[in-house]
Image (cartoon, rainbow over the protein chains, first blue to last red):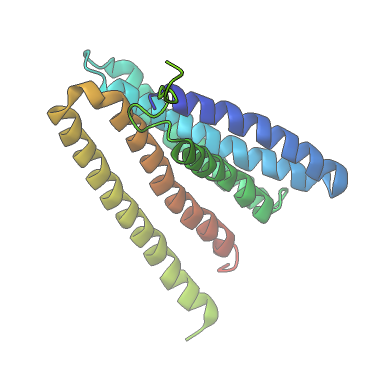
Length: 134
Length: 77
């Protein structure tokens, strides 16, 4: 379970949020669907920034200080000021925004549960051969 | 005590408490992860992934508090 796990989470959440928001737009209201999509995008951008920041800072090589500083400075205005305008505009349903925002965590929990149930992180389980087949 | 006055008093306190909790949680998580990477550099990838997921979960709580703050802020004025 390396950093590619985070990339898979981001991709899965993007696809799921798109499909769910299309379904919501079709069956309910396009504003609710759009709110769900914006909430999911907010959550995805947040995770992307966290991943990039931690990768840069924790890297065994010397951290690229300028990139790290720009990312740290961008993260807060982009996420929180944009979040303020999104919520304050009252264009989107707040519940849809929060549901979209929570989608990423549902994806993470389900993916980790799947890995636990399949035993993918237990050494030796993935490549274990049934007796007599090796 | 007026409803608006109570809200104006409680909102900054609540968001401040959320930020303090989140900051303490993040600091502790990242500190422990750094220690673990220092002890086992070969497991850095796995530790980083767990740390990123943990950080995202912790930060989400602050963002929920922030959204609640933005929502209730409109009721003060």
